[in-house]
Image (cartoon, rainbow, N blue to C red; front, side, top):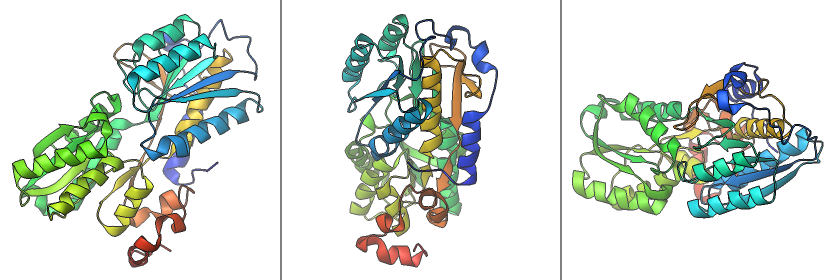
Length: 366
């Protein structure tokens, strides 16, 4: 569908293809599955994504994973797809349905990493390997791919400090973290705090229910009331969707301060163009999606993960999970051309609509 072209993304592709021995040393996470060892290209892959409010899942992750699975199986594999629409109970039911329908492997992006553990065990007991995608699900997962999520938070924190400059000593920031049910949110928070603590005062901090922009908006309004609009010098937002809600609240209060983000959503990139949002974290989805597809096909066919997984991570319930961790890029006005446009994520025309043309011209985006 789209190819990743920047140097960091190229490195990520190398990560996804690098050999290592961690998979063979992963204890309960052996990639040999007796039930699927005889499988060829004619496999059935269950793909479960968590929600459809964030643009990335339907626009990038799903088609990229499907495309790679087809390539790896000579177009013979079947991909069975379900989206939980941010409902953990519904996702549990979707896993159960796929177990009943005897898929050969699951790629699972959990709505709630803890709540899904029982369903992961059901799949495992049925001889169906599970690849945790983007979020580290609990339970006996066989493989995992995501971005280096602590580094994501560090990247956001470093960018915010750079934007603040001397103002970091003069005021307070608000931290708008993601949902407490998402293990990635805790890692983003950890990375951000490792950079921000001791450099700037955190006036208010929130874990935002379900990552919803409207919840971030309400939290931001509360923070403005509590801290005072003249004392807020910046906002750490864990993703672009929440940044939109935050910026709406800031503008209503007449506050203009740097705001971070993540996912390089089109609306977020456009806010970066206008200067309303300072930065986003660009995560090249192709290497993450391709790694998930490679691991899923290998597991379904009873093959080793040694040629795919370079890293190994521990979840709260499972040690030594063979993993692929993909690097990220700080996206600002200065590198829009060299990232999302160069990689074919968006065209200049998609970003620079009539509403944004003057701002695009101002920063040389043509």
